[in-house]
Length: 332
Length: 228
Image (cartoon, rainbow over all chains, first blue to last red):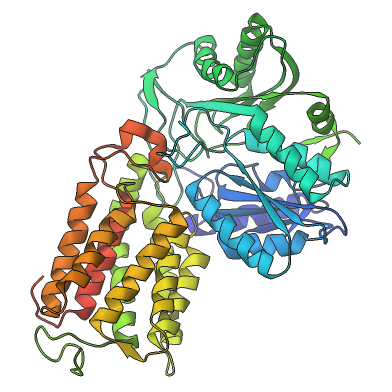
């Protein structure tokens, strides 16, 4: 294992401390694993809290700031935060208008956020939760934990964040978050595993001529190990299940998000984006908005994911609204 | 039920008080620490490689708090409630709420008694198991901790009032058999379920740590020198 760390057990706190020093005008760390927007709580504004395991940076702490999240609670690497953290974040951002929890659909995350919401309710804070489950690689059935939350989480945080910033009430912010969940679909591929610092060994290993298709963002293996293929073919293998699932149809306008898993450079991500753009054009689907970069990562894993969100005027306007966070910034 | 102090008579059913429960937790922590790498390796195959590390972190926190939680005035319920809250606050992932809820419900079933007999303990473990299954929305054969704990706790209740050390040994055997029985199955809960058919044939890390919990209970409550 070769990493720029001190002690594995100090990694998350040291990284958050560094983030707060780098973004002093945006956020502060108010307790271990609790990152809060610098001006929270804002009276009358719905608070947005998200969180999950660390190792997906910039998700979630990199999205704390005006127009997006009010707080993030990162857990240990690839491990859900604990209820104490989530409760502390919820209290810190409650401005009297209620708090929305944005939860990626993993067994541990869902349970810990549920426990925190029960505790917050006992404090008299109104909490609603939206569960993001956009990964088409997982079959959604009674026989699985359900689909994972992956790249679509960023889109939920951005769009719900824009609505909350504009003064929407809790029910409206929740409705918009659900609209994004309903219209977003993702799928990912890994060219390498990744190494959890406390473990010290890669979670899985791939030969030079192999890729793992349908991976999540925790170094867990995917649905199938298949021969490595040229980028255009990989894009086809990711995009086909996404298009068929919603389904996306000719005439649709979409936001196309090509996400790096942490170890794949932008030069390759733009090759992927180009191939995706051509594939979508061939199906009569228009790319109206785009995002390319490592935003929802899996430590140093090589690979990428594709997320498509079907757009309409309402979602397009909220996507375009100003945002000022460590990792996403435009407008204003 | 007997008034005999724990460990005094071979095979006798002890009363279970704060010292015995603290010993159980200490032994569970030691077994998990020793098996940390094995648990992590099992989890790496079908999950996200954090079960051993997370559980070890939480149980070390529990051990550090045991002197305070078991201080004079403590009851089995107060001790176990403290254990539950510590696990919920330190483990994270799915294991934190699941083991935390297990100990919280166990604590809740024991009332204010300064010590309990085997029957009350078995009933309490059953309550803990029900809480865990409810929190995780888990059923038998989902391939989780529940598949090891359910047969073990059933064996405990069914085995009484036979010799306590034999009942505990049978309970561990039933738990291990439950763990191994579900290995060929496809996981239906947690991250292992994302693998679909690929999870079949892999031993479940949660069921594995649950057997360590049972072994620790046996070692803490079976009189010294007892078989198993």
